[in-house]
Every structure is written in structure tokens, then in C-alpha cells.
Image 1 (cartoon, rainbow, N blue to C red):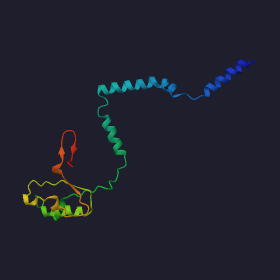
Image 2 (image 1 turned 60 degrees about the vertical axis):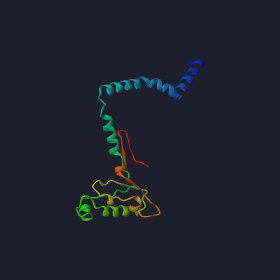
Image 3 (image 1 turned 45 degrees about the vertical axis):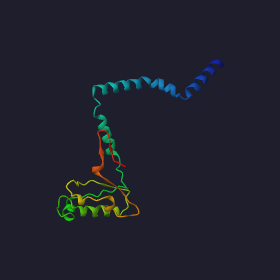
Image 4 (image 1 turned 90 degrees about the horizontal axis):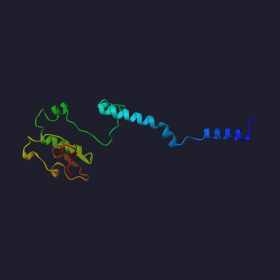
Length: 160
């Protein structure tokens, strides 16, 4: 027959089995697995097996993302039809037409207008100041010409 001591020991064992495992106890149990996986990954990286894999992973991650609609950015491009019809197949682009195009974009009251057009062959009289290009408006956008951007090895900046 079971004594009261045996019954008390069994009750204590049952209580201990029901107690949740603490974080430290789980960490002690999983430490060998964590260390083994970390060492294997370091060795694989050192031997070069993982080079390029991070790019594949990143590319896959980005490909699986739902594309975001840029709601505040608009790009006005000049395609072959525009070049043919609006600019009359004329190179360099006619400055008066470019000026009208920029002014038409400015009527939408953007904060910034970025312009990437080769103006190197334009005559001095064809280059406008910002005041000439954009008549006085209530909200004058900042004009950023691609030629004004500063490119270095580490970053791209635009003068303010």
C-alpha cells in the first residue's frame, strides 16, 4: 500500500510536470542546435557557398511583393510618337517646345520637376532662367536639372 509520503511525492511530480518551461530552460536545451547551425552557416559563408544566395533571396522577396502604386509621382516621358509629332523629328529638341512642356507640367502644381534633357547643344539664348521658364505662380515648383546632380562613388546628391 502507498504511504502518505509516496502520495505526496507523486503529487509533487505531477505539479512539476505541469509547470511551464522557462525561457532559460528552453535556451539551454536549444543551445547545441543554435551553435551547430551558426557554425555550419559561418563555414558555408567562408567557403563561398552562400555568395549570391543573398541576392537570389532578396530578388525573390521583392518579386513576391505586391507592387506599390506611386500616387504622388508622375513621369512625363518623350517617346517616339512625341518626338515625331510634337518635336517634328528635330534634334536637338526645340527649346520653345521643351519650355511649353515644362510649363504645362508646372500647371499641375508639383513640388518638384526633375528634368533630364540633353541641352548641351542649345544656344545661349535658348537656355532660360527659372523666372523665364516658370512665370510667377502661387506655388512655384523646384526645378532640378539632371546636369545639376552631383554623382560620387558612394551616393548621389542634388544641391538644395
